[in-house]
Image 1: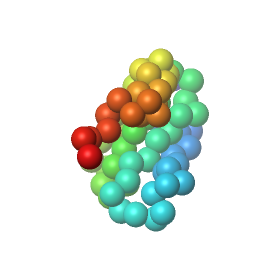
Image 2: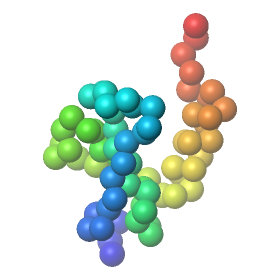
Image 3: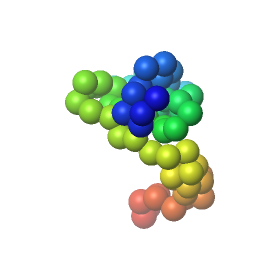
Image 4: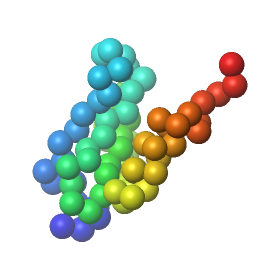
Length: 70
């Protein structure tokens, strides 16, 4: 499988999206990459991250690293 081969990707949205239309979908079941795409426009392209990059991003989100000022 190459990094651009998304065959077998299992896409899911956050459970916090509550069916909203401003969501992204993530496929984290692939061996080499984590893929992210826009729910509204799935054919517009896909961002690919290594598993380490994705883990660092998720850790930053959980730590509030990207929160906007109140």
